[in-house]
Image (cartoon, rainbow, N blue to C red):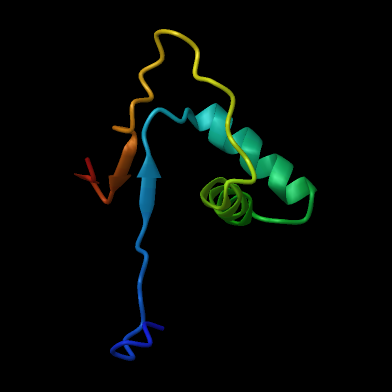
Length: 78
């Protein structure tokens, strides 16, 4: 809840472009095998990244991950 005006904050649904079905399926299966959800795995990664406790490895040259993969229900947040 936003304490400033007592409204519930909704984060919505996020899509990440460039994630293949195979990668999504494999990650979801691994999460399920470990007794968790892919949502929880992503939340933990975002928490660690925003806290500065985890940094992803450098992107390979020629990758197209330039921030444009973030979209919310089809609306780019660039």
